[in-house]
Image (tube, rainbow, N blue to C red; front, side, top):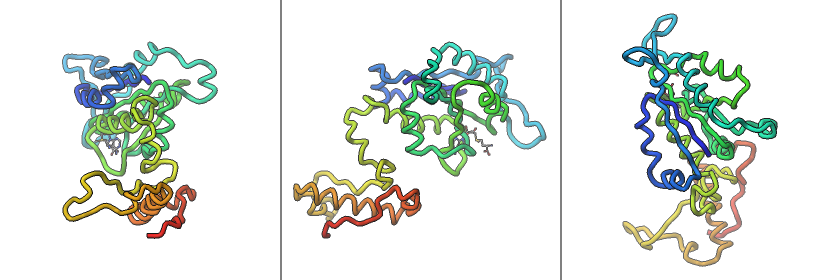
Length: 255
Ligand code: SAM
């Protein structure tokens, strides 16, 4: 997968060279390129923003500079084949925004199958609305404005790091043991993950549930399902409402 990131703070993304994503870049599974938006700006200060039409506080990033920047990089990438166009876009432009659609595991899963993702990190009061409007008007990659949650960050950089981590770990070969992805929170079952334990067997006067030492996998699975269901009902009851995705019955495991 190829990832392009446009930002005025390229150094922010050094964090992606660490751990599993760093290894995935070394092995060639992931190729991440950052681009400094100021390279497309003019004038001694390479300014990328201006005051808002209509007045008000803060500055707004200029759509013309953003469009020029994307144009020069996207046009240098190999085009999708017509088959790929027909079967859905293999490229997407992702614009972090507090007013975008929520980044979910489902969206991350879908994007993990794409060949190329471009992230556009806004700063100040955000990017002139015509940037996304113009991208959507063009026949080109799918454009998705995404939000991490109902709060406001200073810039799109941290949202982009979160999104890349959520998406890239689902790309085959990025995580060594793919099995570890199957029973996670927000996965197929729609439940949060059950509590997990490791050695030592006692910590701060707390032991571990006997069933986990039983070696009986049917009992262990039933216990885990029940705990996952209980935790979801307690912490995120809303997840149990979504399309009946989560199996709402307690198992027959006898506690
Ligand atoms: N004026 C904007 C508003 O009220 O919606 C907020 C702009 S914010 C200070 C600057 C940038 O941070 C945004 O353009 C976006 O890239 C990013 N950002 C802020 N909150 C975000 C969130 N919850 N999810 C994703 N990106 C966010």
